[in-house]
Image (cartoon, rainbow, N blue to C red; front, side):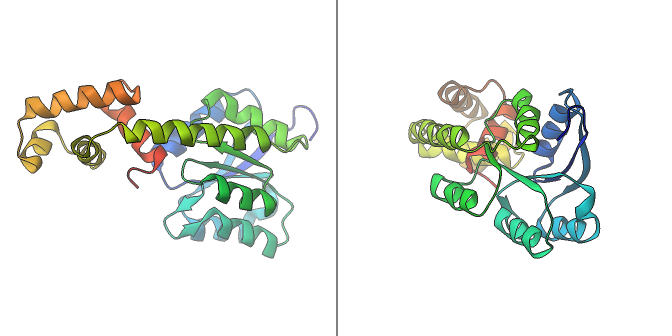
Length: 215
């Protein structure tokens, strides 16, 4: 990739909040990254690739999708004979799955815990021919270990409250569903925030999606 060339990207991700975050990160990066299209599932991604696959340079791909996995999109790229870079951005794929994906020919892997300002840097590096794999596999393993330690510190009641928060329930609704007071719900949430290192319900929900507590 020559210096200054635009990187044309297909983003395949089913979570609207994650798509928004990636879109903002790429727009603000200064690397000339352009989202040519976004797909919410395998079907939409394959349809775009069939029609416009030669108009993009790179696929930024989630692993867990509503109608399949990122591997299905990778297989479609091969079937269509497209010369594209593929970078996985996922919080769901474990170490063994990541290794299988690397063996299948993807050019990089980023955990969803990656900092927003790192995303475009990685994509630009991949477009320059540098596979971004080992460092992030190590990071994934560290992230998974850290997440597991945090999740193991949660009580069953705290896990229930996280799931209900992710479902959009208010403290009052959660209290009614669990037959406890709203004050008790707020106390539980304060403890959860402290354990997971988050500062708000929205951050808690994003964390829950990232580590696979909810889907």
